[in-house]
Length: 183
Image 1: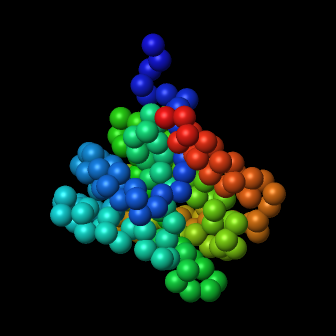
Image 2: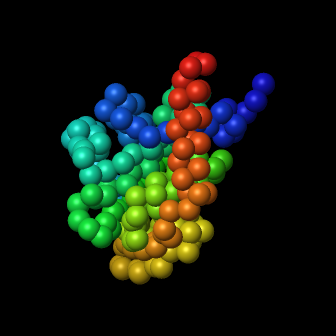
């Protein structure tokens, strides 16, 4: 029997309004430290419920990482259509027991391709100084870092869309939809 902590059955797909219960459940399953890292501070269950109501509004895109049909990680590109040129902010969370197996990397890669395909020239990411996972992901994509007392701001500059970035987004959607046919 395989280890339940492998990313072998990982499916990353764009989330829609039908996924709000899954998103809420994911955030509520985050342990105290992971939730604090995701929201850059303490957020109680009521705060999570309130946040989830607006997560899929018109100017954001969210993608989820599913393992065996269960949402285990989420990336959000917020403020995507707020202004031109767009300077959205990215936020990412992976449940503690599922960290370290590539879920964050898969979500980050998908988010980066989606931003690139929409002509985003600057992505901002704020994280707590102790959030080494997010700093690592940002560094892998050549982010520029600006440190404050408690927070690190990462700034990423995606290239223009490429055949590879378009293929990443299309392949993820095809894989996600075909996976749904067989579960």
